[in-house]
Image 1 (cartoon, rainbow, N blue to C red):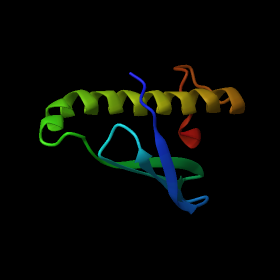
Image 2 (image 1 turned 45 degrees about the horizontal axis):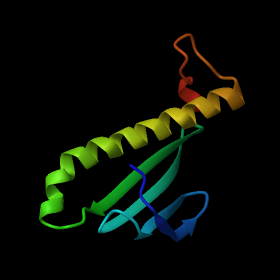
Image 3 (image 1 turned 90 degrees about the horizontal axis):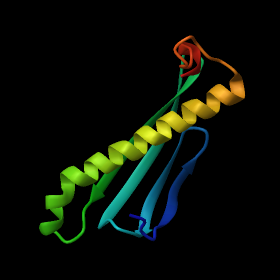
Image 4 (image 1 turned 30 degrees about the horizontal axis):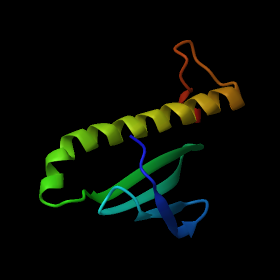
Length: 103
């Protein structure tokens, strides 16, 4: 279910990290840190999300559903990034996964 969402990039520190914060949207509070690390010549992406659900304490009842949805969103993003890199770099193993140096 789509929600209107406005965010602000509150920290911009390329190529190491950036942070976006919800200004308007479905959460009471949302802060998402994206961090990028060099790991043996490959880039490792780490996300850290802090959020509060709206309509406290009743909104907390939706926590399992929201957590499941967020896991799906991040899984989709991970798979999309891998798919893009496979297309751009041409690196592919028999299993269709990026070799270790491209993950």
